[in-house]
Image (cartoon, rainbow, N blue to C red; front, side):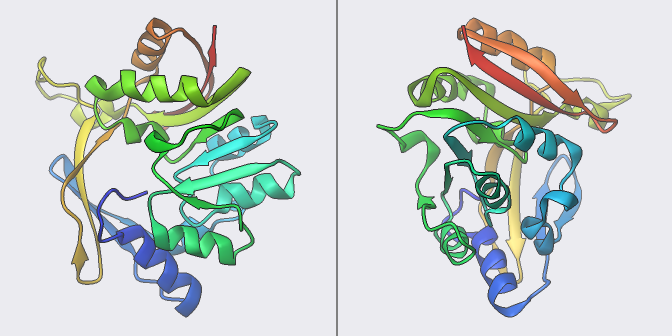
Length: 233
């Protein structure tokens, strides 16, 4: 979940799981006010998940890669449904907790270095496409997807159109409004600033189709969030 070596998400997940610590993760951005992520939300059950995530889990089939698995909530539900799942995360502490929660197959690895495996479903939830970081890096993201996807496999990802943050503003034509820089903090630990990407659906569809994918809108909510399915043509 977090690209910083301080492992903000891992610290919070570990403290909550082992000590029932409810201290939230704070998200800082120059684009909006600080936001809180309740750490217990990272341990949500299927019934507690938003509809976007429930639909993605319902659509998951076959061998499934759960990218940025965090505390393992999605993977645990997939496993309960009988799917073979590989949970991965760059947080070593998160992977440790996943193993303790019943996911011994969880692996501490960067998505972009994963190789020699293919999947029927690649799951990127909680704005998982954000790992591409910028529009410029999307070709690298799509290239890695191609190496990991089985024939007729699918990618299920969600994102949000951040246009609502810029209503009545003059937009900068030289910078896409969904390219954000964040830092996160937990107790006295603060990460460095790191880039994260949000996409509107039309742009995702346009860019993914140029890379040889079909892109289908599965679901959208009233808060500019959507679930999309990508398949290689």
